[in-house]
Image 1 (cartoon, helix red, strand yellow):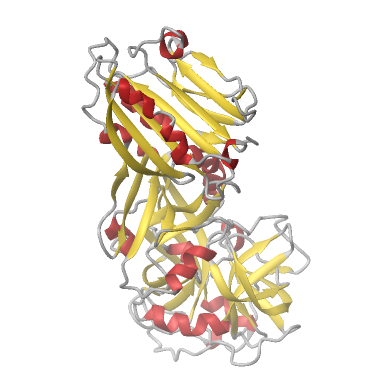
Image 2 (cartoon, helix red, strand yellow):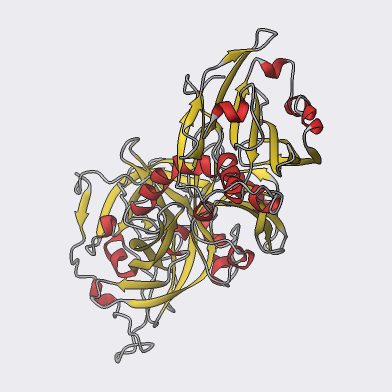
Length: 548
């Protein structure tokens, strides 16, 4: 829930602003020095006159005979710069307008071009600059593949020079050239190199490509979607990722791209639900796919997903745990485009957990304690409508933390040892701890207790922790037990109402992480409507961050 998302937003927002989803730099394409020994600006070779420039009206006055490019010297004529405009949504910040630039290449004289999914999906408009033209042409997306990071677009007009696919074996040491518009610069560039490894299986934060060419032709952010070609100008692969840190340059192998592009140009999306996403994780307890934007009319859009959502489960399976799209794409590859897929998301800005279906039921809020228990608090205790705000508190060791109302300023975070010698990490808070849990405590003062212990997990579980509180039935009405689940923990919770004869409500949650390495118990007492809002905040923020 909220607790994990907060740790990731800064990283994810930085990645997007750097161009992970269609901007000037890809997540893995870390820009370095703007020039290199192998990078050269394209120059006039005298061969450009062999192909007449395309026209927006569907041809030229001289009725050009469009032809395939046959030399690397002419690749610029069929390589395009794509400027995508639109909005993405940061889970914390909200809507942010953005412009990103990538590359692409034309494969058909009618203006059919190939690029990356992360360059175009979710954009509001595409402006395509062809063959050094100063004025952009419009284009529309025909089909995309999120997992293979491919997209096919249709550029206005026709009569275009185009590139053909390479039919030979992509072998190690094959001479190759990377064409495109790195760093968002309108100047076309070409870098040379060789194929280092012809067929790799690469997982990244935004794609899961099964056939990858690793090569030494330098690429940077903005090269995304541009062609990797031979000396004859034939396409060996589609550039999509690179890293200065590891000196890697990656392209989607022609063996994967060619057949897939044929499907996409027919308007068929492949391994895609219509999102521009990136896997995010804190490396411990939280993981998912952060959705920066959603394509209108896509299955994701129809299900109610929107920019800023973080998909935590697909088909009831957690995704993104390894920081890549592998798990997400494995599920999509095992299903058809019309299959119904269960999906769960966190909507950070509204602090909701939503569940629904791709190609099925729209997303709805799956759980809120405040709504679940609405109307249970009947106390006449005077209180403001809402708390002034919330603050994060920790136990004395810093191993556990939780957000509580500012007004609950009395905090005790001392760990303790139970009667059997097991250490319990514990933090408790209230506006008056003595009135909340002291010897003469009443049911008139709200507060909370959050405990966690790995030692206790050796002999107790989430259910036995709940049973210890069944003694409350002498003071409250037991309202029953329900399952509890969030993005990190699962368990059960008990609800007690009309406590102490003053209308107080008590909620006790017993939960464990996936590996069951420790147990958690959270006790919360609510006496007014604003306490139920605090209850939701507490259960959206409690987290074990250290060794317990």
